[in-house]
Length: 212
Image (cartoon, rainbow, N blue to C red; front, top):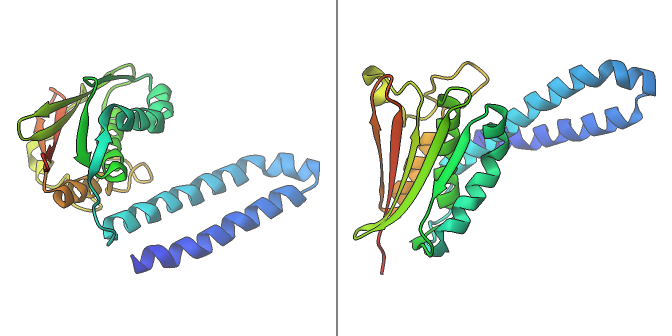
């Protein structure tokens, strides 16, 4: 948490200086510098996302479950990931009964599910699909995220929830998403599990216990 805060503050300063630099360049110089400046901004924003995820992983904020419209929460997930899915031509399908309400922390719920769906999008082949299904059960709420990617090899299955563990190329993933998801489920007293096999895709089950 301390490292993330130390990085975040100067990072915001550098981004602010970039804004000033871009606005002060003459037209000819601005055109020449457009591509390198865009690459610099993209890299800085990626660093910013990593620091935010580190802060989420280290956060001391209490979990605050309350009655939450699951359909609306999953619509937020859809909005967060629509661009990423469109870029890879991934069809996102959400299956949620209406009404569907559960006692969860709304922000934590969206973060936990979005991390899993984002990974499913990355794992799926271009033109593939990701299905998100939510159901009330006698024990609480079950959210299932299924992709048609290559699955997870047995030798790394036990490590996918470890902080900073990632099979993605360098610069494409921080390895924090599933760690944060597991922490959020732990805070709810719930559980996240995998059903996967090589060449048979992956199903991730998020179980939020019934409260009250």
